[in-house]
Amino acid sequence: MNISDIQIRPASIADAAFIAKNVMAALGTEEVYAEEMPEQVLKIWNIMIQVCQTSGVLYSWENTLIAEYEGMPIGSLTAYDGSTYKESREKTFAFFEESLSFDPDLMQDETKAGEYYLDSLAVLPAFRGNGIGKMLLQQGIETARRKEIPHVTILVSPTNPKAKRLYSSLGFREAGEVFAFGEYFQRMKLDTTEPMRIDILTVLPEMLDGFLNCSIVARAQRKGLVEIHVHNLRDWTLDKHKRVDDYPYGGCAGMVMQCEPIDRCIEALKAKRDYDEIIFTTPDGEQFSQPIANELSMKKNMIILCGHFKGVDYRIREHLITKELSIGDYVLTGGELAAAVMTDAIVRIIPGVIGDEQSALSDSFQDNLLAPPVYTRPADYKGWKVPDVLLSGHEKNIRNWEFEQALERTKRLRPDLLED
Ligand code: SAH
Image 1 (tube, rainbow, N blue to C red):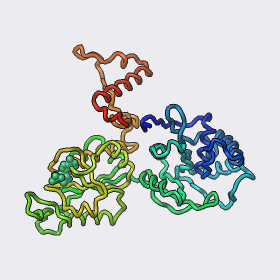
Image 2 (cartoon, rainbow, N blue to C red):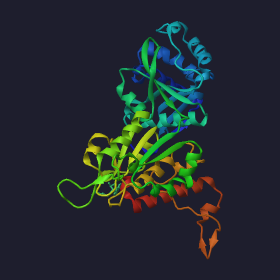
Image 3 (cartoon, rainbow, N blue to C red):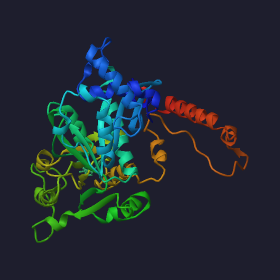
Image 4 (cartoon, rainbow, N blue to C red):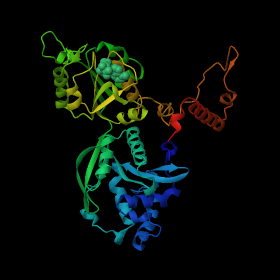
């Protein structure tokens, strides 16, 4: 299956039976997916369907996003504003009365005001392992940002380290425990208001000035969505001549950046906050790509180390670097341009940076398709015409045309993108 064929949409009341199963599965009742449900499970499912059809309850269809594949719902995320929790919980539990298998009075609050709570996430067993849960979570985080709720929270069972790793990769951090439904859960929390922070380490800070002060990257900093700090490695050397490089062992040509200034600078940064990634720009690294940019745009704090000369002392790469990235198969003089390329690609897709979310999502590569051609006024320039369909005002035909163009261009120019 191709992940670009997955659509995320708000649920409708008609999805209630599907949502009910997923809520139960998320609570540990996987038997709901069995062809023949055990009688007790069927009984709860029937009640749960009524719950999901109702407004103002925890598991309402109104709180739910659906992942759809070829017109079929295959996953869902039920999430809501924590300020509505108490009232909704009471209303929800009233449906179950005697059939609760735990004592609701012993249950701690799962969430509270100031949190957007991701209550139930489930993907049909046959579709797991395709990144669908992650898509739903990302959409949930975006919803919280749009609603300007400062935190997103989620509970994870200590017996599910895989889910915990997924949440960590999206920027969730451990935040205590909650006793609910008769067991302990780990609480994980993500801050939607603190900006992302990128620290760039370089011997040529001037190379980054212009880039950081222009266009979308500048606007993202002004909006407080990202903080970018450039550190001159010469400020971190203990050498009185401010040297940061030395001759290579073994006598080959060129100079190598020394361990000490880099290590001291990184140590000082790490003492102040946790870093999700310490990236080294290097032509022998993994090739930077849109999926990597998407991944990194969800991180909180990152360091990007720019190499220069012949590169950095290999011990830095062995002991401090967590990710090595190349921007292509050619050799640059220094890592500054590579750091700029990565920073630009990462920052422009942080939710809220580009006003019209759609515009970043419809770019080339986001759906494994190249973008269709674009035109602007005038419709006729020197006899060069804009395709008629774009002037027709017929929304559906225009979308179809764009899709056909995108597909045709991808087949012709980048067939490799369509391979899996
Ligand atoms: N001798 C090294 C290249 C050094 S170029 C080698 O052959 O691997 C100097 C610095 O520029 C590198 O340390 C790296 O930080 C940066 N750089 C050069 N080309 C790059 C590329 N394609 N992608 C990312 N960084 C690059």
